Image 1 (tube, rainbow, N blue to C red):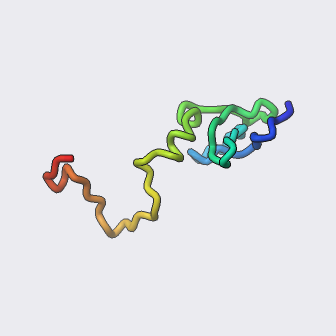
Image 2: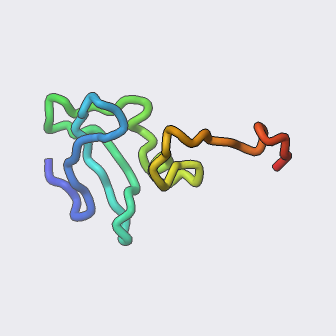
Length: 82
């Protein structure tokens, strides 16, 4: 199966299983779609693997490393209302 110009065969990195997928990218190089790589015996897509663009670009995603010695405090724990 031929890939489109904006697609690449890659390993899914959302879990340790290492499923082969075909990732599609938009004109800015951002991940736009993911589908199972049918040319690989390990080409499959789980429920989590169906949503990588939403996970990768989520506003709730941590953008910096978390120091395990520093507790994560949210507004609820501080008694503040958003």
